[in-house]
Length: 99
Image (cartoon, rainbow, N blue to C red; front, top):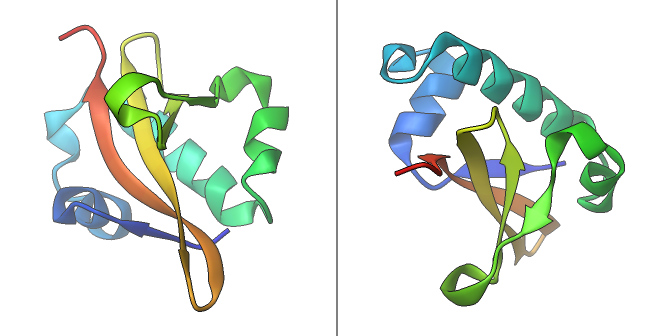
């Protein structure tokens, strides 16, 4: 599936592995694992089939956003967007849910 990054720091992490020291190593590994899955899927519904990701819609003010679990503490948040080429995922951030 197509994707883009909202924040330059995630784009640099993905393409250049820059800033990886800001996160625990297992979170960085999980980020690359999840991104490889996102790159391989054809449709966002495929993420629901992978139960280990805990792909879910967020609630409240963030109801248009979704997240996948990187570990028990960190989530990768994203939003489904559309452009002239169709749907794509806008990768928002890696978030510490315990803060």
